[in-house]
Length: 578
Ligand SMILES: *[C@@H]1O[C@H](CO)[C@@H](O)[C@H](O)[C@H]1NC(C)=O
Ligand SMILES: *[C@@H]1O[C@H](CO)[C@@H](O)[C@H](O)[C@H]1NC(C)=O
Ligand SMILES: *[C@@H]1O[C@H](CO)[C@@H](O)[C@H](O)[C@H]1NC(C)=O
Ligand SMILES: *[C@@H]1O[C@H](CO)[C@@H](O)[C@H](O)[C@H]1NC(C)=O
Ligand SMILES: *[C@@H]1O[C@H](CO)[C@@H](O)[C@H](O)[C@H]1NC(C)=O
Ligand SMILES: *[C@@H]1O[C@H](CO)[C@@H](O)[C@H](O)[C@H]1NC(C)=O
Ligand SMILES: *[C@@H]1O[C@H](CO)[C@@H](O)[C@H](O)[C@H]1NC(C)=O
Image (tube, rainbow, N blue to C red; front, side, top):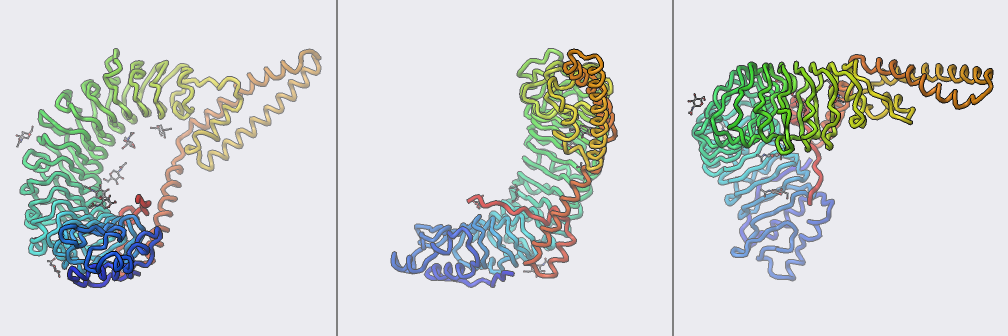
């Protein structure tokens, strides 16, 4: 384990020596950028020891004061200990493997404005860390292992509160409750606050006095209670609000904000109807998926001229899909898993241009009916279309958009033959369900049937379904051999043009025989252990990463880590960008 020693305060002329001290603490320099260039003799010969060492990799010098103003060693995979350089204004140690307690000497960095140590393995109590920070404006501690609660006592943040504009503590192990109204009100300059992916609980206080706040991300915590109304009103000119993955409840009444661009309230416990919005909304992204919204959608969507992504999936919304939704310039529309009924309200004469930007349309798991509109083909950019688990009837459109990569119309009541132009999609795009829908075999490819089982859609096949497929295929093969033998025997009896006749007979008869039985197997209920085995693998990976990560940690931390959710604890090992 690496120990970070308390700070030493250096006067200006000692900076080179301080840097050389700092260098001694670097145990590993895999990219070989720091140890070779941080070289005292080079400095000594070039000038005197008092000058700022411009030749040191990552050291930024201020010409006027001839002193070190920044050390930028991000992405070098260094492991080291941090000392202080009292005049330092900008410290960027992001994307390394620094581990250990946070640098307690930070309080001596009176000039420090920017501290970016994101994506390391630093730990320590966030409350104490807060009281160490003085005049900092930008703090990014994200993707580390800081723990403890946010400061409860306003006296501990008073100096920081005046200066801090950007604070990112996301993906740590923070617990406790959210800041109290008193403490929060001290952060007058705050523009960006990101506390996402932690374990912070409690209710949110009023944000009414944080006039400068523009970005608030609190996703994946354990917050509950009502969403404070002022976050959605005009008082604060918020641009982005992400409260997803918490336990917020109650209903959202009005969203009067005209500045809000990104609103994500997904995976909470919100009830009531779809909120009313102000007559002029700046929203580009609206996600309220996985809540308990009910009632129907408004018919008027004209105020959402900028809206590009809508995700209202997994709610109890009902009624018709408002036609006005399709006159917006949307990219992604996800209304899956609701109770919408009626037809897809495309204007039948959709021209290219209208809906031109639509990239993904997911209306799965509703009660939609009618035909699948032919005008879909005009949505040039459409890449993903999921209409599965509805009550669509009739024939499939003859053509679908050229760029479509994902098609799912399973579990409907479609009939007829899959049109030629759609046969590049795997059979799993059409079946199960749609028992009256026929997929003609690939001409000249007798393996078409077996491809269906073993090949392209392997993710659907659990081990047991593969076993069943093998058994069915073997039975089919045995029957085929028997049939060929019989045909051969009969052709021998008849004595003329035997071989051609037998081949034709086999092609036709065998296809007719094997296909229905294979379909039957595929028409069975979806094996659910596919997703199970996936998440098991995932957990296994997380656990093993957690264990290897713990090697460098002190025992009391291990306990906290074990209590933490694996997702917030396991940080990806980011590749070096530099
Ligand atoms: C720190 O360095 C990383 C990688 O170069 C960069 O993405 C990040 O913006 C820097 N942080 C600050 C505050 O400049
Ligand atoms: C304030 O910070 C000090 C450390 O400087 C800490 O000992 C104390 O517990 C903090 N007080 C509160 C109420 O968080
Ligand atoms: C906070 O940090 C995380 C991880 O480094 C990053 O993904 C996120 O965009 C940052 N938040 C803000 C508001 O910049
Ligand atoms: C916000 O919108 C609601 C519903 O449209 C309206 O009743 C309320 O007066 C508005 N509040 C403000 C502060 O504009
Ligand atoms: C829906 O939200 C619950 C918590 O409210 C969460 O456990 C679940 O994973 C979410 N489901 C999806 C599909 O996001
Ligand atoms: C739509 O919502 C469902 C359910 O929340 C989700 O599984 C899916 O990934 C979302 N997006 C798209 C493009 O289908
Ligand atoms: C198609 O949708 C069904 C039901 O919504 C789902 O079970 C199946 O996994 C989906 N198939 C593909 C290939 O996306």
